[in-house]
Image (cartoon, rainbow, N blue to C red):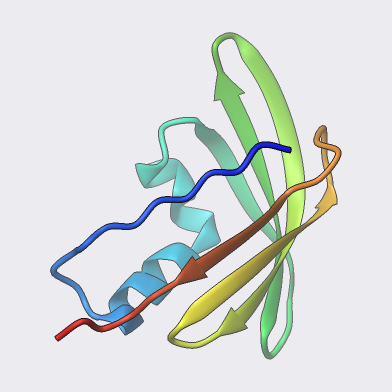
Length: 96
């Protein structure tokens, strides 16, 4: 199984970064490989969203359930798509 981990120091608050990552419908504006983003369902603490990707001449789409723990984390789990598994975790921490 492939794993990817990244961290970054940014001049924004955890709440600002949470809002950016949680705004799924705007991903096509700033994520180069996302051609379309759609919220399929929204609950009190979750969003089910679908992203369409266009990269290297191929198109794929996947759906995830994103559990929101405002403002410190977003947990992502694959619902449907071309992957065997897909999970992710965004954490937002104030280091000041």
